[in-house]
Image (cartoon, rainbow, N blue to C red; front, side, top):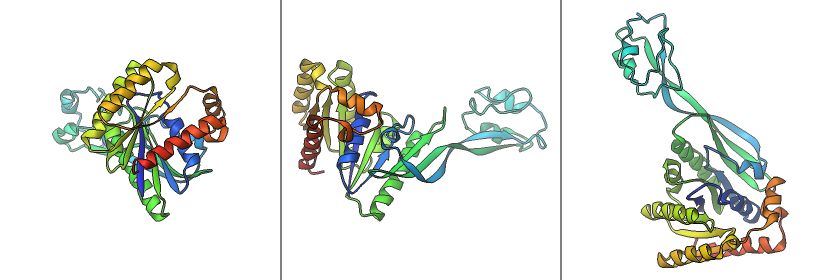
Length: 286
């Protein structure tokens, strides 16, 4: 079983559309959406949820008013000003440090685990999808990414799948690092702009730090042939294969608007390009 991660140094490069295309193209796989802060792969795959589980992470202080002696020590010592004068904890302001629970002489403050989101195992027209939704203003998305990936791996092993294809989060933060562990290939999607090249360099450096093999896709390359050449020269310089280039094509946008993948709703040229990209990736021993 091979795990393939589609990532980008910045948002909006087209990684979810490419991941959706792979979902329609590749057989015998499990799909994963690890962009838990802003998941959108489900918009293309229209999943039917089969299992739904709560995700708990982090803690918030809770004051038992039956035990509280109203000494105000917790209010005075809380650096985040999360406790009001009527001894109610603001769950958004509370950082979960648990200091107040240690200093309370009446032992009236307990730390409760937060319900931070949900994760799902779903069926789609292209096979199983493991995805999640992090709650508003919740943290520890890296922990949720690890949980989703582990569930997908177990599901793929159970069903004897050949691939786990992961729609990763953008950027270089904790969720990306959690997505990179144990990956066979990181496919970086970029666009022909200065910011696209800059952010692609950053995420490539992160992947190389963890010794993950990297390949690169240039999306919408026809918008700037000069920047496309700069990106290709950079990849050649650091010995990273360019698995393919995708031109700007309105049929891709139309497919997205209709909630379909590129493979389902695009012209023959784009389909062949995506097929060639997958073929080139497989030649890279994924």
